[in-house]
Length: 409
Image (cartoon, rainbow, N blue to C red; front, top):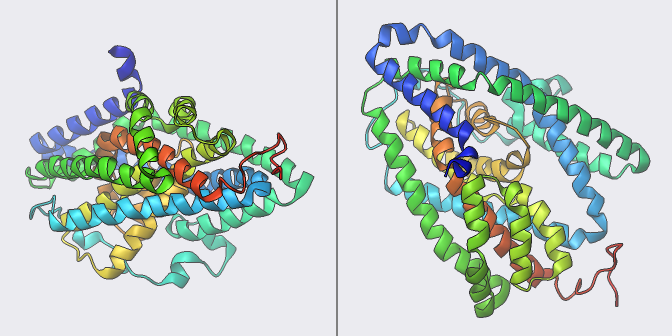
């Protein structure tokens, strides 16, 4: 039992710190408010590392992916399927959360600090900047991601020079991950202090909204796991595909629940794909990429976080905000979810893109930590269904592959 809990050690410590911070803020509000600078320092340290983290991690990942250009059709299929599998749960969770408001009228008194332009759909300023210096601001994360993807593709297509740059980026990324690791040792204190200060001035009913939001997510994911997986497996392999999926999905699902890591579950997922009779070459190409790209569970929880926060802040969830929510959710799954060790990157991405107050970050962290295991299960089992669909699309053209990844006629 203790071995299975080891994977959740960091989440348990962080949740305990946030719970204690919330209780402290409710019991001793005057003192709790004075702790806010401690939390602010921690968040500022994270903000300072966000730009190099995104730029280096995304460029490094994309540079490696483009090494598979000989298998362009499969790669395009992987990306297309991953995007669709992020959009579907995101839209579903948003509609469900709008129908059943988890905040239930409870309001977080921070609306006066929300950026007046939050939720706007000015695509020019959202996706680009008019100066390179603008890419160095956390307020332009979307533009930074786009330029990093382009840079990664360029590196992958630059031959030996690109290989050398890619190796350098890998080394820099290792150093950045170590910086993140060092900073995360202070996360329980920093976020606990910030949450205490936030809760000190809020209604005690706020804590109940977390349970409703998390409960809503679990219900949505249970429905998506059963109906969504069945639909995807049917698209990938018909009735036989559905039967094989449900016969062999349990082992990777349980492993994902125990490890809370798609990457750690990958060997089990590959073995289950073989038991399902999926094309070995296609599975071995697709599954390692899907681990980083296909994160429907992450997309769904990102969408819920945005709807929940907008409800708590009493903000209108307009059509523009809905479209921006889906975009952010897809990017969280497709790009940010693949950034190794990018702790709190998703929360910071939400806050900076939508112009929300930093005080909501601990709230987003609470929801994310509680739902992390369930999200991972969704991510992992749908790597199998995605592989079924990818094989359905490409199987006839890539029925046999040589060791050099060239099709035999």
